[in-house]
Image (cartoon, rainbow, N blue to C red):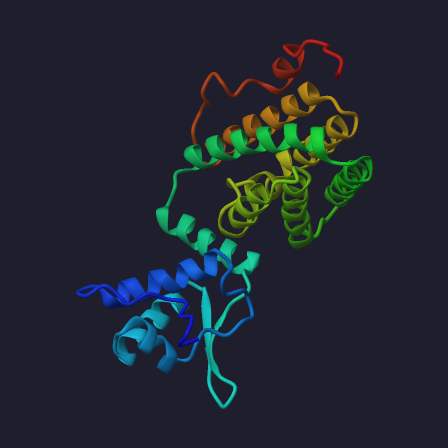
Length: 265
């Protein structure tokens, strides 16, 4: 290690920050892989030409970022952490919660994301994946048609469906963001299931969306995505005691009557 140092001497005046940045860069470019141990504090302070206190400060900063974990004992030291999707999603979910985003902004984001996810899922997912999504939406509809549905199971299945659809894009970024949204916020979708007047229509609409995906009909699937958010805005407005909603929240019958009969590709 001393003959072939991994790190350069730290910059004077910003040693702690520079040490942390150099170690982070080594982790990001794969010079130190998940599960591997970093050089000892002694080796690090020699390589960086700085005190062991500065090295410890840098390691604490990296630990807070979730990049390293420090173990004690004879086989202890600082080890590079495996990237964990759940932890990353929880952090983003917490950030979203703290922002106190208005329902309208969240709905706008979710509808835009859902449209992209649905289009990619139709193009990239296999037939088995599409069929499984459809079967689970049928299960959701069955649960909600029960006289006294188990709402905890319903909400969990809805989250599962959203994450499954994101996975069908074959783009991990959509899955990460969807998991975070489902952990922290779900565009207030829960209000639709909690309202007896909307829950069956919501479940039926999920099934129709999945059927459109399974049949490879993007226009049909996207029209149902749009209808979901029409219902959601209308339900939230009613919950807030508003007498009416915006013109974009059209009535159920008018919505479907306005939809032309266009076959899938």
